[in-house]
Length: 251
Image (spheres, rainbow, N blue to C red):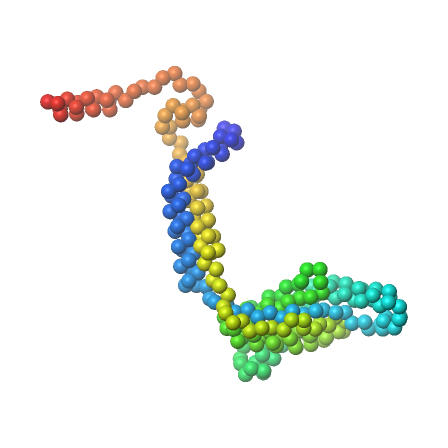
């Protein structure tokens, strides 16, 4: 059997079971909606944007020419960008998260752990720049905002105390308290559930059709064995039964 024939067989199997596909799509969408409603927690996000800048420790800017100054600034920016991966790893250490937790608890009189801070933080680099962003996500708007405010001081201080302070940072965009929770995004999740249902139903229909080795007629016989069919035996017994039933009714 060639590829085109296989594709046709798959499409035929799916078309035969279109009702099953629709049913599974509806079941998947409903299941996704129920799961989202029951098990998805609303979250609140605050963000802080930082700019990293390499410190000129060799006083290269003493050269008064504009070209030299521009070259020095470019070199420092490139160094800061190159070192960003290293600093992001530093921000993921237990030491840094404990530092943020202690600052948070001291400032707001709370008792949060370093593990909570670690789970709340996501760090993203702004492509082709020396800027990076801390995204704080928790189930409490105040907590997300308070952690973000602590990061405004904890991040620059950590960078200043790391790598001899060769790269430092400044806050470019201050955090804002979230006024609403992030959406549970029902349409997208229901669509994913429906697609998953269609895939499962499609696999079932195709596998059942391919694994079914029964011969239902001359077309199946020719397809499976590639031999000509000279003739077929009619269903005499069925015809005889029908004739007898008709005779009895007439009698």
